[in-house]
Every structure is written in structure tokens, then in C-alpha cells.
Length: 387
Ligand SMILES: *Cc1c(COP(=O)(O)O)cnc(C)c1O
Image (tube, rainbow, N blue to C red; front, side, top):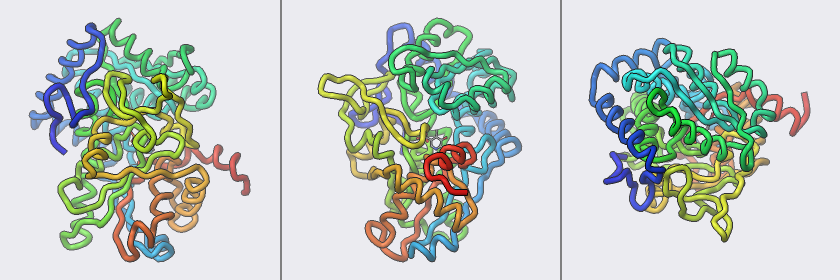
């Protein structure tokens, strides 16, 4: 997966659909990132922090018991073991370094479930930056503990009461605040979405997941590549980073969306949050609410590069429903002693369903475990009871 075409296009998707007041801000980020990404010193600093602070490289774990049960060889890329419990740290550390490089002192971010807000607040604390996080009123009530975490980390959490008072509205509000404070503030966007250069930049910052996985797998298997590479898709950053490592191999690439938020399967091309992509919308073009058991996948769109990979047929996008996700969540806990994030359990759920079917028996499957499930334990307990 290379750089996007002119104007930040991935095929017909992507672009930079922003008000005049943000065109220069996006161009500044594009320029700063290009310079940083070409600078070995930037990489040395980023890699150093991700190693000594973030815990990279994260391991590749072979699931011996689960593999026997499913009849396919399952390996997990363990982003759950990165600091703050998911792949999100890879993105925010990179953007925090970029913020300082641009001479800015403040980061703002949107958050739905709160995970990206916590990650951004973490990076800001580490680097001595101010941090403000925009969060819908509904999400603040659902994710009280993450609001408190952000405050502990020194961030200001701004309640968003417009629209549906969820993630979509938080992004709008963060963009508005960026317009108002662009001289001092960087908008640390949380996934491979939004206006160019964010979909490209965030994918590059997450490609460490795919690059590490490929090398770890080759070391383990005498230079071979896995047959299938699977990741869950919300905005699409952990999947994009994973796919970047394998797009030039023969591996089949599969993204798994929540059945209630399937922007590839049921989305219509349109413009939202500065990008042209596939979006859940009604006949009048009103954006629909996404629904999923995991708040981290409740986004009505998908990163434009995924829409492009789907259009080209290089990656396919499947769905998992809430019931399958809960079963996969329990299965991994019981068979491997790993409690996955509900988001990550979507990727596993597809593997469980398709082992011996779309995934031929005996195949090797690399699954990105995007995060750990501690944050979801209370919710799962309330849903399925027991213990
Ligand atoms: C945020 C999150 C996701 C969804 O975001 P992507 O940009 O699609 O990767 C998936 N898994 C976990 C654990 C998350 O925290």
C-alpha cells in the first residue's frame, strides 16, 4: 500500500473535503508528516518510545489449543499487550511527536468509546502537551470510567450535546475547535479517516503492526507467509496497518465489520468528516447511526483506503454479529487464557465461523488482536451473565 494519488485519493475515495479555513492546516500536517517520515531521526525517536514506553515489538502468539479446535492454524498479533491496551498508542505517539515538530503545544481529539481519548491523553502527558478531548454526551454516560481516566491523565473532556451526541458529532466538534485554534493546536485524529493526509498518515503510523507481524511470521515459518490475514474494522486503522505488511504477499486480506456498522457491505459512497468514502446513510443522504456491541466499532463510515481495497478486490470485508462476537470472546478466554477486546473478537468470530469453510482446513490464519478485553468484562457479564 503506497502513498495516495493527487489530492489524497485512493482510487475514487479519499480526498480533502474541508472548509477553506482547514485547507492550510491539512497542508501543514501533510508537509510536516512527509518531512518527518523521511527523517531517520524521527523514526529513531518514534521507535525508541514505542519500544521502551509502549512495549513493542508485541509478540506473535500461536494459539495451540484453539487451532486444534478449529482445524486451522491461528496466530495472534498481540496489540493487546501494547501500553494502554491496544494498537492506538502507535498512532498517538507518532502524532504527538509531530505536534512538537510543528511547534504546537496542544492536541485535541475525538473519542467515542473513550479509547482514543485515553491514548491521546496518555501521549500528551508523556510529551508535556495540553490535551482536550471531544466526546458525545451519550458516550460520556456510557463510558464514565474512560472519562475519569482522561481526567487523571490531565486532559480536559468536552461534552458534545449536538446531533446524536455520539462519535460522529464529536468529530464535527473537534474539527470546529481545530479551525478556532489551528495556530497552537494539532488535531490528533484517531483512525484512517478524515481529510488527507490523515488516512495515509495514520496507516503509516500503524504499519508497524503489519511489518512486525510479517517478519515474526516468516521467522517462525521459515520464510513463509500466512494464508489469511484478518483484522476488525471500525474506522480501519488496525486493519490498514496490518494489511500494509501483507499487501505484497499472497495472503488473503479480510476485514471484519460489525454487522450493525457494515460500511463496506451496506454503505453508499458519500462525503463525511472531510473524506469521500462508503457511509451508512438513508435515501436522503442522512448519516445513520452504527450499532455494535463494541463501542469502538460504532462508526457509520470506513477509511477511504478500505473502500478502495474492496473496490479493487485486494481485500474482502465480512461481518460478525453480536452473538458470534460474544461466543468468540468466551472461546479465546477459555482456550488460550486471553480476554480480547470486543472489537478484536469480531475478527476472531469470523475465523471461528469460517474455519473449514471459507478458510480451508489446515490453513494458517494471522489475526490482529487489536486490544485487550478488560474494559469489556463488565458489559459482557451484564449481557451473558454467569460467574
Ligand atoms: C478503537 C479500536 C478499534 C477500532 O479502530 P480501528 O481504527 O478500526 O482499528 C479496534 N479495536 C480496538 C481494541 C480499539 O480500541
